[in-house]
Length: 94
Image 1 (cartoon, rainbow, N blue to C red):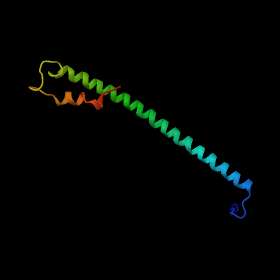
Image 2 (image 1 turned 45 degrees about the vertical axis):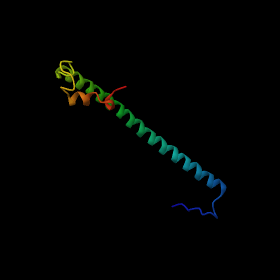
Image 3 (image 1 turned 90 degrees about the vertical axis):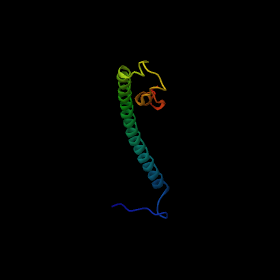
Image 4 (image 1 turned 60 degrees about the vertical axis):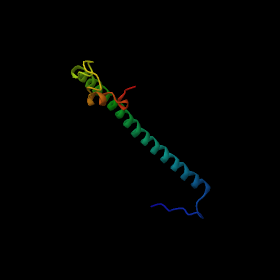
């Protein structure tokens, strides 16, 4: 075990060395967190693309079967909650 410095015993050089060690440890932790964030972003990007494709397929299939989507019926006499859900602004893809 190494001796621990106190305020009264630490030298300027030893304090500088401790600050360098701290900076290196902080850099290492920042790099680790950045790698984790990059991996999470990549995963979320892939998942968003998959969900976008699934949404497009759901829209396509619904358009083939819904009389409202095909223009055969018109609101307010006929409404389709699926059409509403599939065209909600929150679901729009850029």
